[in-house]
Length: 336
Image (tube, rainbow, N blue to C red; front, side):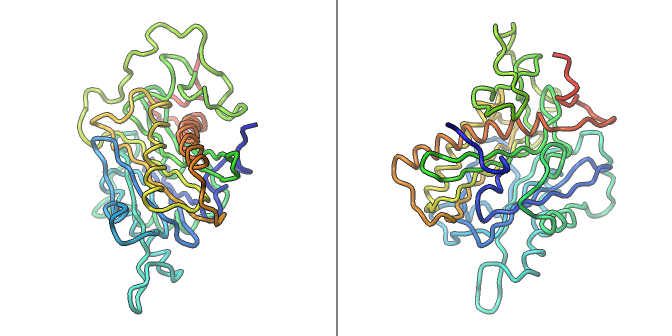
């Protein structure tokens, strides 16, 4: 029988902590993922408009194997400052890649576009994301809140508010897999004009409402519902995510896991990976089990990476809370 981890959060993967920080007036925020100890990391970018920091070092042929943390942030390119704040927190904790007498915390980051979402972005000379990044890292724990929090605070989809989503899954081989995602796509996570989620096939219990798939499918289900169609330009959207496992993986295998997780985007968002989304998945392997998966077990992990990511995306939209300034309704206020 399929089952989630204890929390149904990415922190069910041993060795990971997650913290959120946000500014309600800004309508934007930051989510930090801390790896204690460091975790093998990789990345796969499939969107046409990514915004990132330190992703080149994650390629399998490059030197650094492990990271100390990851940052997902709102704020478009301004939000890349959030990684500096998280790095400062880790530096104070004495963590990082050892180079002679110095330790350099390795904190790759990705951003989404939430600059036009009803929040006050008149922040003066410097954006607030560095401090939000530090606070998110300081808030990191096993338990955290999904929905309109952290990097998902100001997120939107084509039909409903977006949000921060997370889910976990325990494979038949005993490995735990977790997904974390800030859902802010150009497309929609729901089917047509309904509240049914594209990811319904993978839902465990009633974790995002239990509506299942509509029957029959409503007319126009496959029609494109596009957010900000009149503002199509690079960086105006983006779904950014992390897929993690407690299995012992190489850097190349961790990248393969991130590639597999992108199938979860395609199952949960229509359309996904557009030229105007910066869709990205970081992969993490904490090796907390100390076990290298067999070929069959890795196949199971890869399949679960896609289904768990789909579930996390739906949970992010499902958990979003309404606000008077909303440009899109929260899923909880739907009428169908």
